[in-house]
Length: 236
Image 1: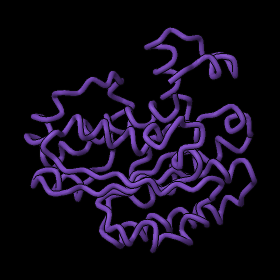
Image 2 (image 1 turned 180 degrees about the vertical axis):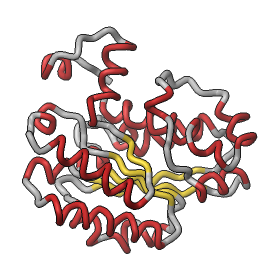
Image 3 (image 1 turned 90 degrees about the horizontal axis):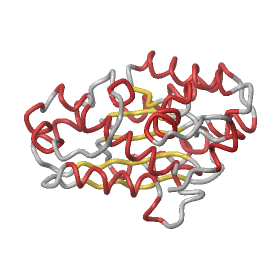
Image 4 (image 1 turned 45 degrees about the vertical axis):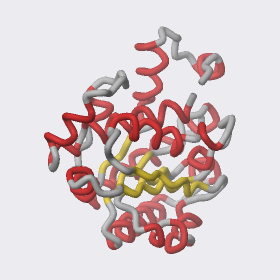
């Protein structure tokens, strides 16, 4: 379920959000095939993805790198094809049927931001991405972190991504019972938002206020959002 949720809503954001800022006609024509039901406030991007939009407008290959830990790598997914990066590629190619798009999965379970950035050159930079989707913060919340060091680390990561010419979208921690039970989760969500604001990039709030899960599980499917039981009742 969580992989499908992330792919559908990120796809909606990429397709219907800031891409209009650069290529409104090209996006409008192909995004009309959308079947993703989502409220506008969950898929609106506050920062334009200029490089990605230019590639879309010119029908050139769009290279997307998904960087993260277990939820990116596919922990809990039934196969490599059902991980969120794989699902995202399927969703995007269905929306933009004449546009070549590649989504690379560069998630490794258990990693924190410092580990991801240690392999940045090989896992990210070498692929020359147009867009980097960076999910960060989950393992820091679970293992502990220092606020001041973490925000500097995330800001450094954003700068390194921008330095190779890529657009950047941050994704905050995975919405899961053991994560949201931690008192540090609110600080981490705020920390990521602050880093993004300072570096002028967008944050896709997978966890913050449970906005995404509440909409998908309650508003659409009518499932009460009441703790672990509701989480475990869901199926992909």
